[in-house]
Amino acid sequence: MAAKKPTVLAASRNDPELQPAALCDPALLLLSDWRMARYTSMLLCRVQQRLESQIVVNPGIQGLTADSPTRVQGRTARVLGDPREYAVAREAEIFAMTEALRLQDSIPDIAATSLVGVIAKLEMIVGADRDIGDPTDFPWPHIASVLRDLKAIAGGLPFGRRSRARTRSDVARHWESAVKLVAALEEEGAAERRGRCGGLLTRLLKYP
Image 1: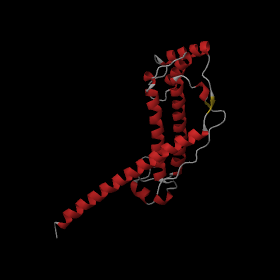
Image 2: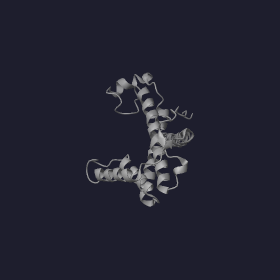
Image 3: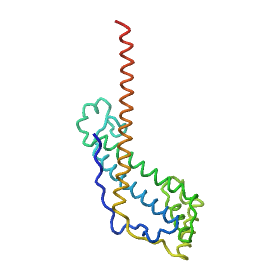
Image 4: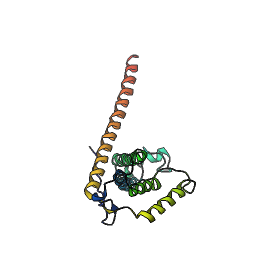
């Protein structure tokens, strides 16, 4: 049975997103898509954390309990959450994060056609959510200072409101992909178990 789709909180009316009328520069389009992917990832992360908090004891995940395996096996009834739904939420978040990383990796391939577009590219570089080591090391503070200077000269980016319909659509898209992936992994695991059992049965039948 497929894991149910998460109930996602709608975006606040104060959450900014680029207005469609302002999306004339390819770099602005990229920034809009990147922000949307990051926001979707954040929502799915919240869903995952909510489901994770419901799993009190899960013998299939090491490190969630300090109890010995013997004691854990006797307490499996205390698992409150659905491990499969949690697995789907985790994979859905990974899909969203991967999309955000793909978009920010395309920054060098997108040519800005305006000063605002240059600001948009720097906004993504400075706000990139990846491991960059020490953010106080060169060149990160220096890039941030260039971004501040450009905003002071040219002004900030045009903002609007985030689309709730697109938020729901993106969450549903990643969720469906995760459901398919988890189902495929489960089927692959079941096939491996059947193969091992079949091999064992074949060996046993050789010895009456």
